[in-house]
Image (cartoon, rainbow, N blue to C red; front, side, top):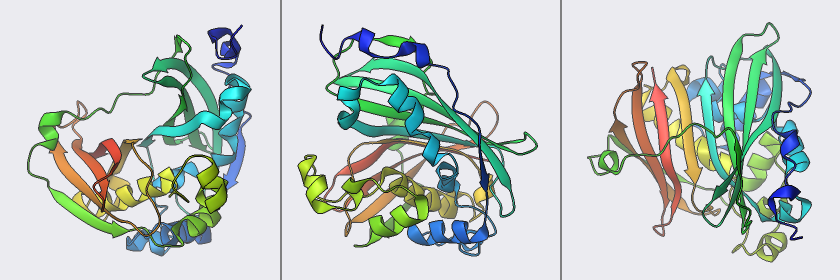
Length: 289
């Protein structure tokens, strides 16, 4: 039997939530994350509010559990972060006690691989929703014909939206030490972001910028451009990671207006391109109150 046949996926683990975990929010952590992602938003730099993508930090240590319990071991080294979708119910503030949990909810065949769709929930200690997230992990080269469980919400961008005149173009720069600062602030210590030899051994050109660090760059580009600098207005941020960014690159996030949501939120499409023309995020969708 092939080690990548459908039976090797532990489908019985779908829907099993991790144990709940508590996270105490401190202003210093919020400030460190803002600085590590070059965020210019004053409310983030002062520690008044968390940068939107800080939402990944409280549940971060739980994310490996669903993956390890569901995915065949021989596929683990083929994983890349495919997509991230964050739905914000209220901003994270200092003094909050957050309760988090995660579960793998779906396994689906995709072109040239298989995706695992993981749901992440963050609540206050009183049970009030703070944010809900979907993480899609892509396992390159997995050949299983499998389609079981839930899928993350769609956020594909209509080409007609991207052909219109942009509402904003925001330039930024990945610093030479960006990945080291982000690793410390986020707790993501994967060696492909810190060690040139390990990154090259994995087939990469060298150290790459964390996908969620790139997502944080897009978040402050959107907050500054279409939220009047108020991140509490951002209600959803979703994207697909297309290619990795590299330290030292200049990048530009281009933002277009999109049709409003059924709930009456303003919607914007976006993508981020590196200075060599490489598109590093695609199918970006932001929803703003």
